[in-house]
Length: 130
Image (cartoon, rainbow, N blue to C red):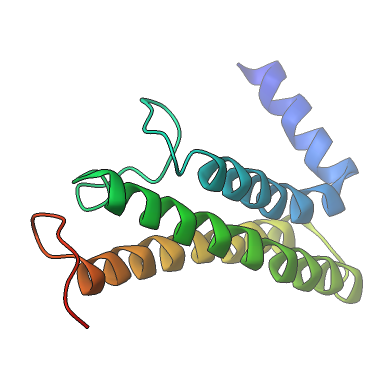
């Protein structure tokens, strides 16, 4: 375990700009995958909550909404992260702070998707009257 920890620490110290790229890249790829499974329910991929799995209409809406949000947010998060990493002299703390700040959009997207589902659909998955 210790050699793996040493390799990981060396990798982050040698490639500090790579850490600012990882989370937005994962967000973009995850958004593409979530958006691509909107028409078919699976066991592995997709936005899986109780509200999104009530019926096929809620599944399609939740995965389309969440996937597009993740794709749209990944590019600005990447640009801001890279600009900050080039302006500020990067060190281990800066990289850890950037990773922490990059994870916040995941929570915001999850909560906004759940709120939108609750506004558009009732508890049984029927579309609400607008």
